[in-house]
Structure formats: C-alpha cells, structure tokens
Image 1 (cartoon, one colour):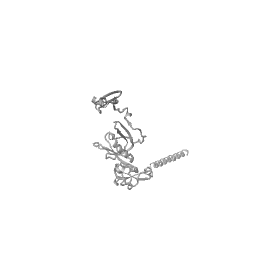
Image 2 (spheres, one colour; image 1 turned 45 degrees about the horizontal axis):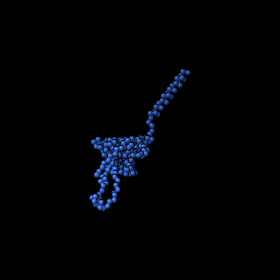
Image 3 (cartoon, one colour; image 1 turned 120 degrees about the vertical axis):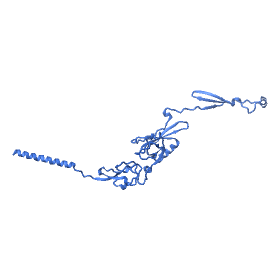
Image 4 (cartoon, helix red, strand yellow; image 1 turned 90 degrees about the vertical axis):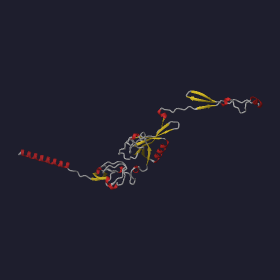
Length: 290
C-alpha cells in the first residue's frame, strides 16, 4: 500500500513537470503581438540634389517603438522635394535629409536659408590634390605678396562646407579621373562671401581639408610672415648723394673780374662735382661724378 502511494505521487509530479515544460515552451515560441507601422523608404538610390518622384519610394514595416521621429508615414508628404544627402536603397527617408519645400533642385536646393554659394578657383595644389569632395569641410587660407617682395598668410575662414566640386554635388558619386575640376563651391554667409571675393582679387587662396569630426573654431592669430620662418627680407642699399659745401665768394671789383676773364655766372669746378656714397653692410665706397 505504501509503495502504491509513492508511485502515484511520483507519477503526478512527473506529469506536472511535463505540463509545465510544455506551457513554457509554447509561451516562449508563440509570436508576440507587434504594433507595426509603415514608414517611407527609398526604393532605389537617391543622389544628393535629386527631386523625389513616386517611383523612388516604398513603404516598409517596422515596430512603432523603432520609428524615428523624422520618418514619414505617407509618400505624398515628400513628393517633389529634393534630397540634400544621398539616401541608400531601403533606407528610411528622414526630414533632415530633405531640402525645404519649394527650394528647387540641384545645387540651389543645397543652399540653406541665410547662406550663399560661392565658387573659388582651385588647382592640383589648392584643391588638396582632388581629395576635396562635396560634403567635406575646409579652412580657407589667404596669401598676399607685398610690393617689397615679402608675403604673409592668414586663415580667413574656418570649417566651411563644400557643396560642389566642379559640377559634382553628390558625395557618393565617383569623379571622372580624366577631368580635373577647377572650382570648388563653398557654403558661406554674405560677409564670408565678400571676404572670399576680395581675397581672390588681392592674393592667392588655398584650401585646407579638415577632419569631418573636427568642428573647432580657433581664435584669429597674427598673419605668418617670412620673419616667422627664420627668413628676413634683405635690405637694399640706399644711395646717398653728398654735396660739398659751397666756398664763400670773395668780393671783386668789376674791372678785376673783367681782367681775370672770369664770368659772373661761372661756377667753381668743385660745385659741378657730385659724390655718391654707397653703403654695403659695414663697407662704404664713394663714386665721384663730374
């Protein structure tokens, strides 16, 4: 009798454990109820400056908790708007990647309100060997050569965004290696645009490429001159003309001047002589001109 009870208790415990295991398995593998929403994504790659059409978009499902704040739920909300930065396939189209409504397309759509786009001439050197691309940031250095042969360089603009290099406005596009752009278009304020135009007229402009994560603006410093490089402009020797003192003229009577045959307007020989002293360092030389 005692053995029979033990077997019954053991059977009940084993059956309870089996039922509990099955219940836990079913609960863990059962699909959870998801709060899905449909957001607007790119159906194909959208380059910067392109205008969005209906066939460029699609809807993708995702959890509402994963929906970004700048996402769109309807394609009609972003039709005919321009893309500021490239959008990859199936990537969500966010408000921060689009230009404002009515801003046009192409380069004009990339010009933010209150700013101006201005182009500066570049070459293989001033364009950092072609490594400047749309979307990168640069500093603008200005060099002026003075009339005495000396020169000075200073930084006139910092952390300026490049929105076009040549005619290319898409950072993801590959540049044609056979063509070398000669202009870079910068996004600046009105005052900065005036500085750039004046600098281009008075000297040379050089672009310095910045790290994309470096947005520090340094305090203005004094221009760098030749003396800061340990090279001083040699001083040119100056010619100094020294005139000898005029000797006093003794009074003579008219008959004596006539007898001596000396004209009244005649000048002593030493008054017609010019002495030029030339200074070369510590050495002084003189040259006499009659």
